[in-house]
Image (cartoon, rainbow, N blue to C red; front, side, top):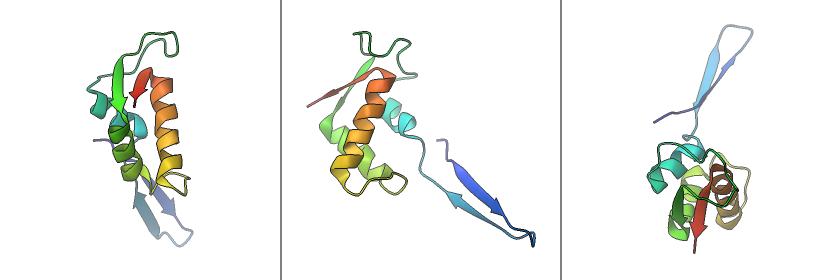
Length: 91
């Protein structure tokens, strides 16, 4: 599972690091059972499907890292990412 890390180094040679959630594409591919997204997204042929329950679960996991106030707005962000990967959202 890929985990992004933000490392900040200060002038006094101290540092901080912050671990974030895995990328949204990782969660989408895992939920849809895919190895990669579509080669031609938006051309009519989807490579997988996600239910609205799966979209809500992904949105709740990524809520901390997203710029969203509500779960519904985070769900719309997940749906947009899924569409750009060629994954169809059902329900």
